[in-house]
Length: 240
Image (cartoon, rainbow, N blue to C red; front, side, top):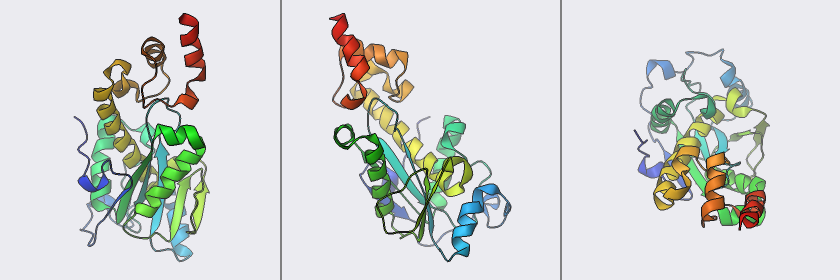
């Protein structure tokens, strides 16, 4: 079943959402339930240093040949943890979609943003990913005091901590990775309806053999990243 993205966290660029009065969290979320978890190490340290709202930030789609790079920012309640939240790449699709619902329901604030192929080609994927993350941070309905970012920094005056493999080490970053992944997967299904010949819903725009062969056969679509297609396009020219 496709994830039903909430209106405030759907496809707008950027968008944001906050929960003005957080409801009582389910038991497995409740503050302090797993206080010793390593996934709260960076959040706990930030709050000990005076931060109140700690935002995890991550992106998805950096290595794709097709489509937008999508970023998410998530502020979770202080100390809250869900035992299933982890790097989105380690989760099955249905589990990610379930966690997306829980995260967006209980987060203090969350947002997504996306940067398209034309900008990616113009400024390069690293800068485009950083731009998407900056936009997601700026779209949060609640201003964060600290940013925890997966192996990156963004152009922001907000104090930030880049964390190598952050989606495996920080609950907030892992939550952001889930929101970003589910959002982009839904976009891939939409793009697949626009360009069914490429199989985007299956490979999500990554450089699989089937995807490369489709590009060689049909040529690139308007949503392909031309700066990523050098070898594929060279081969296409050799075939014709």
